[in-house]
Image 1 (cartoon, helix red, strand yellow):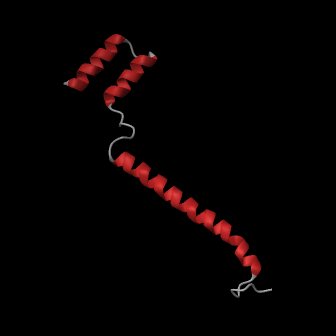
Image 2 (cartoon, helix red, strand yellow; image 1 turned 90 degrees about the vertical axis):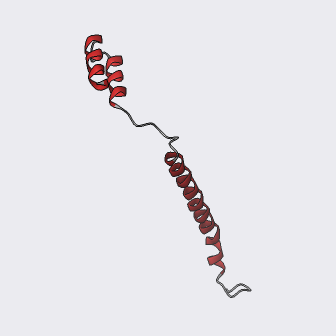
Image 3 (cartoon, helix red, strand yellow; image 1 turned 90 degrees about the horizontal axis):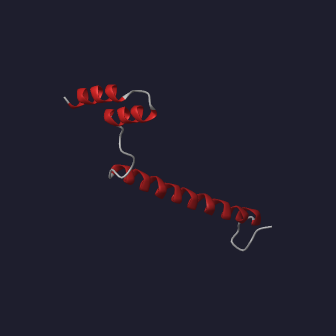
Length: 77
């Protein structure tokens, strides 16, 4: 009924589960830290500017060339 260390034998069967749980949290923590540092250093996605949005609208055909140039001049002045 008790093993040589005084524990019930079935309690040792959960050791592998807790070991996997522990290493899973360690790996997730490292991944979250790397992701946070990656964004902190500016290596992540660049923020979208108004000019970027204007260029996308022009590329999709939402505005014509004249309107694009007029709005672009407004941004630059």
